[in-house]
Length: 154
Image (tube, rainbow, N blue to C red; front, side):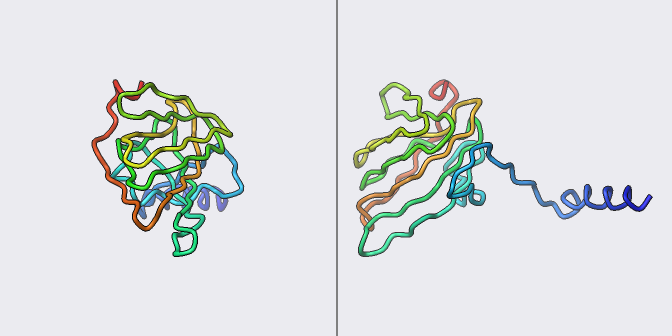
């Protein structure tokens, strides 16, 4: 009876407190998954962010590990100073406005020139993780645009 009560108590805690259990990626990296992405309003689906290196006046860049649940993706957006993506796991997608979708795998590098409208994210059935390198800071601003619709994504 005691074991049953403890199990019941632990089972209902998330429901009572309103907490939502964070999903854990099947992709294991040295950087870790991070927390729920605070920029989630600019994404479709659930993503996680772990800052690896903040911008400073020596390197003029920042690095972050971004993990996407299956089907999650950014909105269309652009960076005035460009961006580099280093794929570290899973299967993802990348597309520049007007171009074809590029399927991404571990080890791929995507160099995105300044002011190129694009999106990136996970494939429909796979987790996806990349390192985002924001280049040419502090003058690199992100302009977030409309969500990627289902016809564009597939």
